[in-house]
Structure formats: structure tokens, C-alpha cells
Length: 273
Length: 324
Image (tube, rainbow over all chains, first blue to last red; front, side):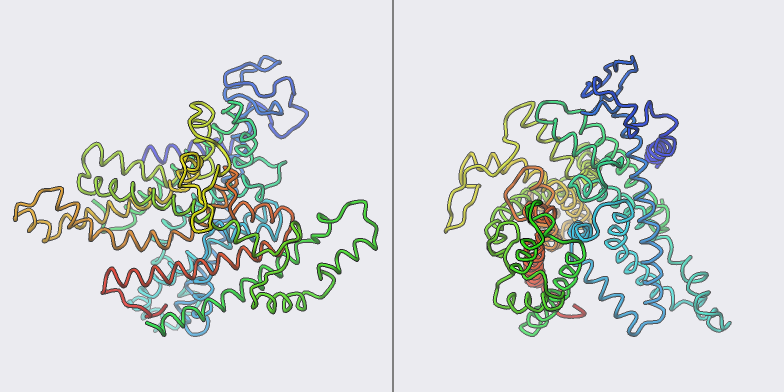
């Protein structure tokens, strides 16, 4: 857990502090010099600053661009995970609690959504909505809510048969209070693990969609866009424009997945050793 | 069994109608394909004439019902960009995608199952640990970036394999395929490896946990007591029990491999229907987008049905129907 947590913390810290620690603001066109374009890693710019990870075709420092790109990854990942969690868990709990037509409607919708691969749904939604940060979050929420709804419903169905829920009902507490104060906390552990895994998935999916040119517009920092841009120079041997953003993406996603893995062990008492 | 298949097909028709309506309305709302299709110098009259020729001046619902009527007869409309029937355009590219997806799935199965067995039988050995760690890495690697890195290593640095296109094809029963010639196989290698990676990790993990469980069962102890060689125990007794979940998951994943081919085909300029979809989204070629989704929905229905039937055949305890 420790190395994974450390890895994730470094990535998160780098993203949060990007404006302070980045050698330049990579999206301020005034700071970019064309003479610096496509410098290899460790080369010096015309102004004498060292470019640790090289520069892209516009003379942008790759290290700075990656730090800003990580910011976008975390913002998109956190926003879509939080929204999908809130919507999916609420619908799942309500479906388990009220049953009937609500249950049938929510679960059929979830079935419909889960019967298609997430990338396909996100592609079509973005084709419809167009590019943009808000739109990509919307598309990610649309492909992820159903996982939470299913998991929340499944654990809520187990929990609602237990005595503490009977006691809460006997106290004539309002439904909303039972749902969110009694049922939700007891359903939470598996949902948190799911959220961690989905968080990593959201970050990868954003990068993939931006890579395909359907996610973020070119003026915004995104690891996927950086990698797509580097693809144009890959065949002439300028590997660093694609390579380093991919490494940053990989380390972040591996960090999250490892933490999720351990979180699952810690939160599941049977697996605890 | 027949009623199960009939009910499934009826459900699928419902999904097909719903999906096509959603996409139709959605793409309708995005924008006017005329902006992209018509020469920017065209005057109002020319634009109006071109719009009417494609039927785009009618109300949405009229357009949709016309589309449904035509679709029932197998005609999904003409592509705006290519001016040929969309369904023909898609079907023409389907073999390339199916070949790529099949090759990827075969790689994933043929490598994933033995690796997973190895890691499951000897979880504490160096090889077992490496395989387990590798499968976590394979899960986390972004597919599109892996494709780029493979191009960098095998095409740019080593110069062994081509980076784009499908290469020469050989006709097999009238369908062009790549895998029958050396040049075709060389073109197939990198895209198929890229597409296989995720499922290779998934299958290796499944096979590993399956093998770990199976190794503790009585029948394995009994086979050992009988003096069977370890090769035979793992290769016959354990393998057979590991295979049931693996085959089911591989079948279900086949649909997502076809979907993810969109990314792989874009990177390697593989002339399949996924690349066609991306190109069509960029020019708002509605008939092709809707057509692609209809074709994919039908493909998924067929795949899921085949997987359910296969699973019940492999493991008679699996019952068809239920709450499907």
C-alpha cells in the first residue's frame, strides 16, 4: 500500500501544485518560443533553461505540459466519479428500498447501459454533445453510474433484511433518513473500492477520448492530446512528445489501481490477514 | 431453449429501436451536416436544394419513421459523405475489424490461459509473481499509448513491422483477409497485439484464480495420489475446470474488443469499421453513425446469445432463461 499511496500522492501533489512548480505556463502562447521546438530531453532552451523532458513542436516544455495535463486528469476523474457515485448510489439504494416500478426502471436502464462497452457509449455521446470539459464529465457519468447503481442495490438488498433496519423502521424514521444514515454507511465499503477502480477508468477514458480528438479541445491541457500530438512526430524518431505523457498517465493509473486493490483487502474483513 | 432465444431476439429488437431513436435524435441535435458537406461558396438556393435531396428539411419524426421503414428492408440510408448506401460501406469494412478482433482474442486466450495457469499453480515462484504483476500493469496501461510505443519500438527503431494499413489481402470465400500471407500477418501483428493486451491480462488473472482454487480440490489430490504426472494434472484436470469461466468472459469481452478496435484502428490506419465511425463522427455522417451502431447492436446480440448457449453446453449446471 505504501509505495502505491506514495506514487498517487506525488501525482496528486504535482497536479495541484502545477502552476507553482512547472518551469513555464505551457498554455500561455507568449511564453513559447518556436526556436525551442522539438528539443530532446535534457536539452537547453534558447533562454538557457533546461528542458528535462524535451519540448513539443511549439516549443512547449513537456514537463510543464504534463503537470498541467495531470491537473485535467484529476479534475475530470474526481468530478465524474463523484457525480456518478452520487447519482448511481442514490438510484441503487432507492431501487432496493422502494422496489416496484422504480426498481424495474432503474435496473433495466442499467442493464441497457452495461450491455454496451463504455468507450462506445462515450464516443457516441461526445459525437452528440461536442468537445469540452463539462461534456466529457457528462459522458463519463453516463457510462459509470450504472456500476454504482447495481452494486448499491445489491448490498442494500442484503442489508435491509437486518435487524437494525427493522429497528429504524419501528422507530418510524423517515425513508430518507433510513436510506442515507442507516443503510448507506453499511453499504459503503464495496462502493468505495468500486469508486477507486472507476476513478482510474475515468482518467484512462478521458485520455483515450481526447486522443481520438473527441474529448477536450486542443487549447486545453490533456495527456491524451499531448500523446496524440506526439504521434505526428513518432515516426521521425522524436519519441519524447508521446512517451513521457504516457508514462505520467500510466504511473497515475497504476497508483490508483494498486490503492484500490489494497483498499479492497482492508475493507473486506474476510480477506484481512 | 427456443423460447429463450425468441425472447432474447424480441428484447434485442426493442434495444435496437431505442438506440436508433436516441442516436438519431442526438445526431440531429448536434448540428447541420450541410455546414460540412456543402461547398462554402454555395448560395442559399443550392444549400436548400441539397438539403431537400437528402431529406433533411423534413421534421425529425418524419425523418426517423422514414428511416425505420427503410431500415426494416435492410436499407440504412445513403452516407452523406460517400453517397453510397451506409450499410454497404459498413459491411465492406466489417471483415477487417472482425479479423483484427479475432486475432486479438486468440492471442489473449493462447497466451493468457497458460500464463494464468502457471501463475496459479506456482503463485510464490518468481515467474508466478512476475505474471501477476504484469497482469496488473496490463490492466492499467492505456491501450492507445501501448499502440504508439509498439510502433516506436518495432517500426521506427527496429524496423521489423509495418506501422499502418492492412497490407495485401487474400480472398477467402470472397472475403478479403490478411492472415493468409506473410505480409498480411506482419501488418496484423502490432494492431492485434495492442488490442489483445487488456484481455490477455484479464484472462491471465481469471485463469490464475481459477487454477489456485482448483489446485486445492480433492480431485487434484486424488490425481496426485494416483501418481499422475504434474503436466497431466494441470494440463487436463485443472485446465478443464479453469476453462468454463474463461470461455464465458472471453465471449462477453469479444464485444468490447470490437468496440475498442475503434481506437486501435485509428492508430494503425486499419481499414475497419471503427475507423469509419471516427471519420464519420468528424463529418457528422449520420447514416453511417446510426448504421454502425445498429450493426454493432446486432453483433452484440449474436455474441451474447452464442456465449449463453456455449456456457450452458460447457457446464450443464448453468440454466438458460432465469432473469435474463
